[in-house]
Length: 433
Figure (tube, rainbow, N blue to C red):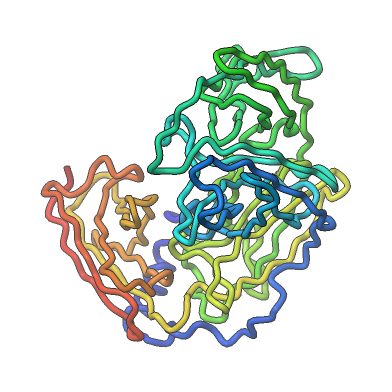
């Protein structure tokens, strides 16, 4: 189901929202309701050990910060305090299900200053694939953001091919110690700017079409370590999701299932059953760490929360025996705390392409979200969460999903948050660029 297929239903539903305050509650569901019936594989221990730069020795706390791939790097991190076990050495044990692909970085102090590489802006996150118990991960931190990093870099260069016939594989993600690239049409890749020592190479198909690869590689200064990576084909299985919605959910409002898989980032329900549950049917890779969540917007705005207010990112680790599995999920809430939603309504100029998007500023401009058509060049969007911010929320309207075409006279609007009464913002757009 796509948005244009139900504008009449949306019109009826959204008019009810506009004149009613009945949707302000956080829901009466008990906070201990089970969010899913899917059972992940057993937890295993993985030890992370890191050598820190000399300037951070015996000064501040060191953390292993595990990132949430769907909510955002800055939004829902899990900070694991590390214990010092040598002059510059720290370690911590993490429990995670077998089959997990952890995205992480090391951070310094209570401000969680991130580590950096030779070029700070290139550093994203490290990855480690937990394929069994008793792993020990050994990393070296080149430096912290705000510090100067000086070393003679090395590189890893190679080719990624299909294991069966050696066909080059394009667009495979290669992640090494916080640096990332993708293979070219001939399967070639190079990652430079690496400190001397042992590094973990991850090769990952963005769609899950091939099995993940992981291997250690020694890098020397001013040299290039060769790597030939052979990836086996992965198998896909059918997975059915049956989703119970929050008590305050309005039928007809666009619902999405978001995943970390390329090509399946944003999915709409295939149907709704007689109990009002949303049904999604997806073809998913059988051996892949799949993260997903439900949302009325993206991974941050209008995403699902626990009743405690925490973001919820779900995880699947599947195998071929699970083909046809039915997963029953329960969404606790779209809201956070007592902060009421914000209703945005925009009237646009007539156009041959009747669409409008809203974009919010959070550190930077976040992903634009398509607004709901009300008819007569009017569009609306109800922001349920997060609205518990103290500073004014800045936003703007766009005519395309990438916000290349905004208002003819560039306008950035703002609205206060953290109120217990619903707010209404009615805006007039005179012309698009």
